[in-house]
Every structure is written in structure tokens, then in C-alpha cells.
Length: 397
Ligand code: TTP
Ligand code: MG
Image (cartoon, rainbow, N blue to C red):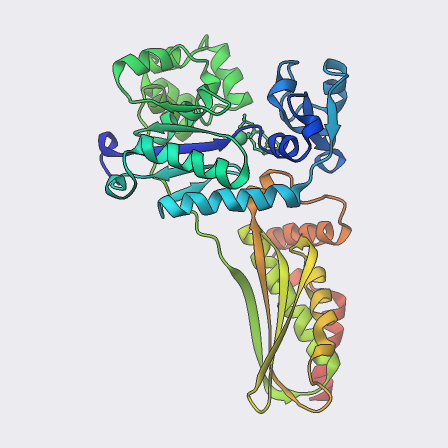
């Protein structure tokens, strides 16, 4: 990590992301209080357009309350698939400017552009170019902040929204203004910490900055240390490049080649369970499932299906594979290896944006099983069908 003074960090955050996309796509929603949210998000607002924010509406507010505050607003459900497409375009633009781009949610990222000056110009010029490219390619506005650390960069992007571009250096002049801001502007100060601090009479960033470091550390632990440092404009956290796996898969080679469909299906279920666990561990979901089969003559064939929804359940992966089985030559050839690969992945960051509809029972069941196995170990839980199929297989051998 470079010396704090030398670092050039840009934070980019899309303005009213979901709402802006809908306003772009529906001229009738332009300049109107638009509220995106719905039942899949447990009846709370995902986001409100800037016009709706004037009525006091914000993300996380129950829709029932929103409708009281803004009865004439336009209320529409979340269309996550659409927002993910836009999110991907934006992330691609970031990666064109620096490999050091860290996603923090579906619509924002930190970019460390230290040393990129020779390629793209100063950090300010880079931020302008990024905002320009985003607008050109998506017709959406974003806000960017430029600073020597992450805390100030995020603060910078948030203070002139929408369509802002702000530089904050950790000079005394800047810090004087920062100190006047409420503590909620500091990362890591959520509702609970905020209330605790407020009980101690701490309201602004400046209030916390002058508190003895040891006191804040004692009361809030590591989080307190970070909060105190940020209040003093210090934040040494590096920008960590987000690495997205392209696919997650597993394969098995049989000790003895088989043509038994039951055995192959049992293998698929077992592989699907392992992949499902891996997806859940890493908090990914997949949309494309590829089934690979190597025959006893070592020839390999594969088939894939792209589903309508993103899944991580073993049932879903298994079902997709079974739907592909007819495409293979299992009547004439024996099978040596079976593999499943899941791709077209979406990550937790999109999950943050309530991507995954809670109604899917199998996804929920799978998640519940995953939680139980995390607590009590894998062996306690096995799907009855897998056990049965493997027992049949063992008997046959
Ligand atoms: P944010 O960047 O926090 O909000 P925003 O882009 O809507 O508005 P701002 O201009 O203040 O940045 O979140 C990005 C998207 O994530 C947002 O459009 C909707 C979604 N989201 C939720 O679904 N629930 C939430 O509680 C929050 C905070 C965001
Ligand atoms: Mg945003």
C-alpha cells in the first residue's frame, strides 16, 4: 500500500440507482416521485427517486409509511434482472481504468488509480472520464469522490449527489468542514453505534475526533479504533480488487465406468450438493448450468442450460442437469466421468440489493439445510434420494 498522501482513491456511486434506471426507461416516471420496492423486498423501499426523497422517503422505509408520506408517488416493483445488466456495464467500465477496483454493492466501487496518471490523466480527469463513459453507455448519472483514502472518497461522492464530482484532500481546511458533519457519515457507525455515541454526547465527526482514542477503543473495540481514525481523516484500508469467479464446478471419475442412469443421477445430486455448498459459502448464485460427461472412450461431451432465475440450491442444480441428460449418448456408451459447472454467477453484492426472491421454496430449503450443516456438520444432512441411489449402486457393485 502506498503512503496515504500519495494514494489516489476514487469512489463512484450511481444516483438513486434502481429508480434512475426506471425513469430512464419510462419517460412517464421522469421528474416524478418514483418508489421502487415491493413484496419480494418484504414491503420496504429499495430506493426512492430524488423527487420522492423530498417527501422524506428513503431505502428501507416500509411502503405503508411511504404511501402515507407520499400518496401521489409512483410505486413500482423491483426488476432486478434489469438492474444487474446495468451493474455489469458499470463494473466493466471501472475495470477498463484500473485493475484495482473494489465493488461495494451493486452500484458503487472504490478505484485505486494511484500511478494511472500517465495512462488516463489525473485522478480528477479519470473520475470525469468514468462518469462520462457511464453516461454514454447507460444514460445514467453517477457521483464520484476523489480523495487520498476510502473514507474521504466515499464521503466526497455522497456530499454532492446527484451527478456530483468532489475532491477532498485531508487538509486542515477540508477536515474543518468534515468535522461538522454528523457521525452517521462515518462508515461503521450504524444505528446501534450511533445511538451509543449519541448517549455519550457525541453528535458530529468533530466530537468523536477530540475524544481520547483509548476511550473509544475501549468502548467500541476495533470498530471504535477505525471510527476514531476516520474522524481524524485517517483511513489506511487498501482498495482490494474484487475478484469474481467465472464458474464453480465439481467432477467425479468413476472407479468403474457405468451406464446405470440411477447411479449417474445420484452422482449428479451429490455433485450438485457440493457445488451448492460452495456457492453458498462464497455467496454466489448461478444462472447457467453445464453438464459434462466423459465416456469410456475418453470422448467428452457437454450441454448447458441457462435458467430464468439465479439459483444456488442443490435441487435446482440437479434438476437442471437432469433436464440435460437426454442430450447425451448414454444408451450406447458407458460413462467414465461426470462433471457439473455453474456459471453466469452473481454475487453477494447483488444479493445486497435484494436480488433473490424469497418465495422460492427450494432455494429457501437449501439455504436452511446449509445453515444447519454449518452448525452441526455436513454428515448429519444428506438428501434421502442420494443415500438411496448410492445404496443401490453399492449393492449392484
Ligand atoms: P444506494 O447506492 O445506497 O442508493 P441509491 O443508488 O438508490 O441512491 P444514492 O443516490 O443515494 O446512491 O443503493 C443502490 C441500490 O441498492 C438502490 O438503488 C436500491 C438498492 N438498495 C436496496 O434494495 N435496499 C437498500 O436498503 C439500499 C440502501 C439499497
Ligand atoms: Mg447509489
